[in-house]
Amino acid sequence: MTTQETTKETKAGQVTVEQKLRLIYKVQVIDSRLAEVENLKGELPLEVRDLRDEIEGLYKRLEKLTEEKKRLEKELSNEQNKKEELKIKLQKLEEKIKNVTTSKEYNALEKQIENQKLDIDLANKHIAELTQEIQVLEEKIKATQEKIQELQKKLEEKEKELESVIAETEKEENFLKELREKAVEDVTKVEERLYRAYERIKNKYKNRRAVVTFERSACGGCYMWVPPQRQLEVRKRDTIYTCENCGRIFIDEELANDVEKEFEEILKNFSV
Ligand SMILES: [Zn+2]
Image (cartoon, rainbow, N blue to C red):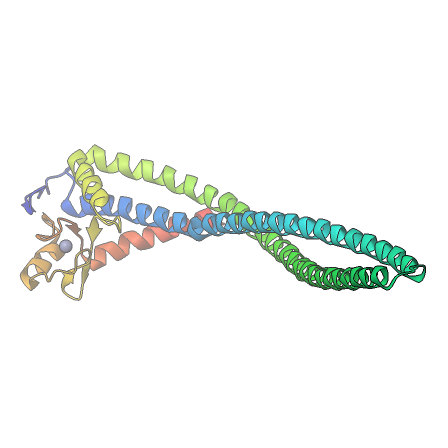
């Protein structure tokens, strides 16, 4: 569409520019509302996904901790067995030393007993260390389990919330889509290329706005200053003007408010 397209049609039975602007702005208002409804869900699916990921990560951590604990418990049990064997050996040596006859034999046995006692001390030291490590792991396991429970509860709440938002928004979305279909039909009946232009402009911009009002003498879409003369012309509603900078279609505040109010009324009826 050109910037200054002349579409003045005031003959009886013809559609005026004002009516066209009304029709296309109605589509805009519905589209903006649809985007808002979509945003309502926006955060929740993400939050639910994040929670699921976090819980999965914690389960993996729990598995690793449990494996580590099992390994240390096995090591501890080996160490305890080793200590028992050392004690039995020591007992035997202590029996034996009572019956020796030579001092050479006595010294040798004494040396062996000494070594046996050192080994037992070492085993005791290992046992104490392992017991301590296992205790630390048990605390970590408990904390992880508690965290999982906490997040699990949070996840259930968020899932419920999401479910109800989806149920709620689905109704409104369907209602809005129906409204949109009708509104699009009304525009295309009058001027199909106006709707095509609308779609093209809307899809070009992230904020999905193709029909805009002025905001402090600037285009409500790109915020480029619009000369007062052009603003005045837009208010006359006898030609459709577009922004020279971004191509968005201009509509004056009063007409826009009118269409918005009309739409709010329709929405009110829906919520009843
Ligand atoms: Zn603009």
